[in-house]
Image (tube, rainbow over all chains, first blue to last red; front, side, top):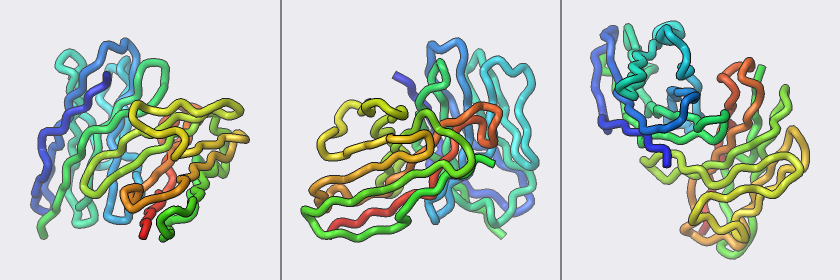
Length: 114
Length: 118
């Protein structure tokens, strides 16, 4: 079974500072995708960033970057220059081999302090 | 591109009644749709996977007779909660799978439905 581990139930960060949200995963798949989503209190799932298992470079999307360490099965999200609007739940997720269902971690609640 | 519309966003129903939730891909064809359930302060748990024109595949522990899924076209999947009870109150969210080249790298989520059974 797929297992996604997020060990930080809650994180605080000062506005304009960078923050790293941790994610590790357990898999025997050769090919897979890793995702990070943001979920504000409204409930919608907002896609942030994607990393393919065969991508050699770490993914970046604006202020978001993914620190991908394949051998360690780690896919940490780095948010630079935090903004108040970044306060939300953040979920790490992985699709199983063959581009199938997505499994989610338990999430990290990020709070940005002014 | 890659927009999924989910309705209703909120619904309150009486215990024993049925509720239908619609998930529609507006600008792409979704051969597969996923239905998730999320309890307060918890993660998304996959309930079932539906493929257009075939029966849904349910995750272990999910009652298929209670949560009826229909995926009759490439753009529409529905989840019907039958004979709803207060313990079915939850946040239900769908995800449509399209081509990897689309926005969101193939998985687009609806905005969710908050179901309250009274």
